[in-house]
Length: 194
Image (cartoon, rainbow, N blue to C red):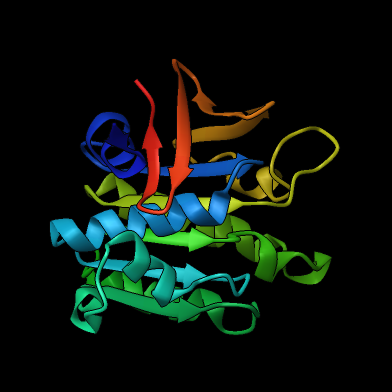
């Protein structure tokens, strides 16, 4: 089985891209699986958690280790409030330290109307960062009545690729323009089924 990490990094975004994943079917598990595989491959990564679902013990379980040093190449940022967040992210992106940025709940800090315009500015910054050969994987579990991510009005001009997770009975699929792959989530992570 191929990992979701390999599919996104090597097939969909080999030269960098900003991909937004939404829908049902284990968004947090997919993102933690990508983090686990990034760690194992030695990719210096940043995991931004806007929801509070990041669990280092889950990544260690997926990696089948109890050695905390496995988390060395992974930085984590809690981002539950929009106040000052755009400035903090700008400073992080200026460093150009991370080949992979994972953001769980991209739209969450900007849910209030008074701060939602900041999501567009942030998405623009992430898009430019991705165009420089980096990969940004963002999840958005908030889905509006249109069936699109809740923040799509602000992210649409900047997201390079959008993928939706769909559950049909017991089967799970990741689908976007030009691809539809079945996957499963195991104790070792998220994998495409062949």
